[in-house]
Length: 169
Image (cartoon, rainbow, N blue to C red; front, side, top):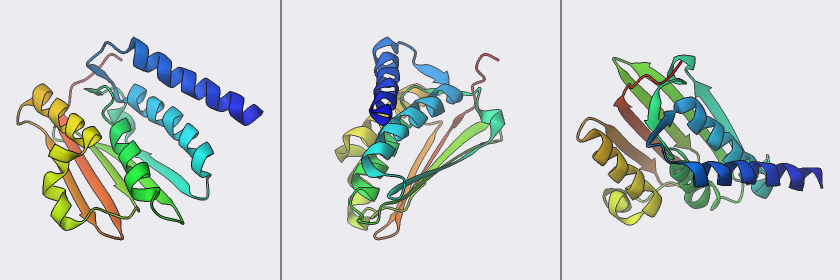
């Protein structure tokens, strides 16, 4: 029962944020907190032996403003299409950094990967990825990077690079 109570609290936190979300941008700190809650629920589903999550967060990026709900669709895809298809599960590694006035977010998973012939269509076919890409295009024009590199059987690497917009201290 304690685990189900904990999952319910996490789910309530997620739903509360989704229902009250009116901001286009949020501090990266908030986005990462949302991901932590989301992953806590997924960890209950998959177990810590099948789903491992590692964060390497540059503290100086925490206050940077990023589009809200930027990371969740990408992490969900890593779990659903990458790790979930592996019997042994795997790991998701999220890394943030700052470089030359840009915020860099990298997500790497050890999932099944994406076939090379499917990568060009990913921005048009996948709902989560195409929505994130489209939002980045609307918010930043051409001043962003959304790069996907994947190897079948080895996993997927996504790099997002956006202009640094300082948030409230």
